[in-house]
Each structure stands twice: as C-alpha cells, then as structure tokens.
Image (cartoon, rainbow, N blue to C red; front, side, top):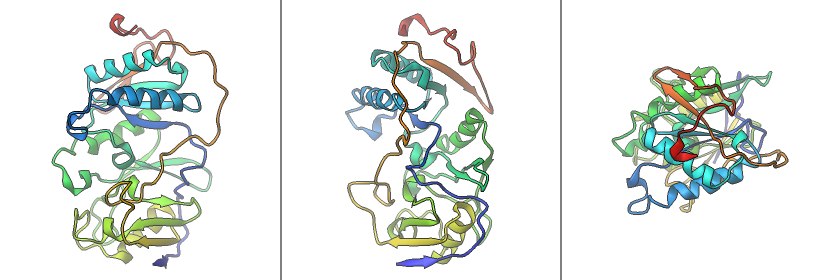
Length: 271
C-alpha cells in the first residue's frame, strides 16, 4: 500500500548509495548477541574494517578499554589502512549502530544534521540505556548538529531504528506494518499510520510511504534492512601503516592524545 504526504521538507534523508564521509561501526563485545561464538567475531569485524578502509574512512566505537585495545590489535594484525581508521572509546550496549545511531539528513544546501531518534532496544531488551546515549557522542566526534525528533501526536520522543527505514533519497520511503503497526514489540502505543507518515514527512522529507506487510526473514526481524551502507566513490589504495588512531570520549566531550596525527602513541602491547 502506498500513501502520499505533501510538505515542503526542511531535510531530506539521502539514499544509502549516495556519497558519504565515513562508515560508523561499533566493535563487538556483548557475548549474548553471539552465544558461544563471540571469540572469532572481532576478527570478522577486522576484515570488514580492512575492506571498508580501502575505500573510505571508518569510525569505530569501542565499549571499554579492553575492547578498545582488542580492536586496535586486531586491526593492526589485519594491516588496515590506518589513515582511514579512528577508534573512539564510547560505551555502548551492543554493536547495531544502524538501529541505535542517529540518521543523517541534509538540508537544501547539503548541510548535514543528525536525527537522534529515541532508542529502546527494539522494545525487546532491558539493556538499552547506554546505546541511547551513543548519538550524543557521535555528534560530538563528527561535530555535527543533533536534533531529537518528537511524535507528531503528543510531542514525546520519537522511537525509530535506522534499519527499519529505506529511502530512494527522493522522498520515497519503505517501512513495514509488522514493525510499526503490529502489537509485537510496540515502539509507539497509539501512533497511527497517518501519524507515522506525518513524522516521516517532517523529519525525513518523505512524500510517499510504501507499507510492506512484513520484512524478509533473512534480514532484521521487523524492519526493512536489506543491504549494508557502502562506499559510492572508491579511492586509490596506498601503503598501510600499522598505527591506528585512538580517541577517548569522556562524558559530553571528546579529547585526543597527540591529536589525529601518527604521533599518537600506541601502547606497546598492541604495536
């Protein structure tokens, strides 16, 4: 079913294939997400980061000091392109930034704003409060403005996950009834189809919303996620350095030791 909403949008959500500055990921650390299988997962992420870094910058959130050091050691062992990697010490509950991190939108001049949706772990898990703060840290690192969208009916924070929305970048949005309108894992009690479409028009510049019944089971359980966000403009590869740049986040501000240059010292244990 397709419905139409008309407005003069202040922002537009770009399509995932449009040019972007970087890919953001969180380093795996939460064992229940990979029951009995966590040990090899960081090595898989290391290979993912290596491939991505050949084409674009990769920003990596690390939950704790041990996770931070583990990520640095694995990335260096994969010989990643270090000038395209930055590690940030930012606490998080789990790794799914596509759902917990903000959504980037652009105004008519191309300026980026981060829409920091409220996050409640898919209305399913108890540990979500740390992930709910990730948007603040990303905005601080990226030095981009951050906005917290609200519901159109009562002004309460708008709960939404990036993995549940897909767009062509020209005002067409794809969502599922299973995700937003069913009685399973309810994000917004009482918010109607029209209410969602009003919110999509206001915050994402949506002109038409296509509602699917349910998601493809090979993807996320209730969203529309079908592909990873990738690079649209490759850059030539170059020789790799083993030194990975590290950032430490403290509350509402971020600092670096030695700046972003290669002068930053890496602990001997991970050289």
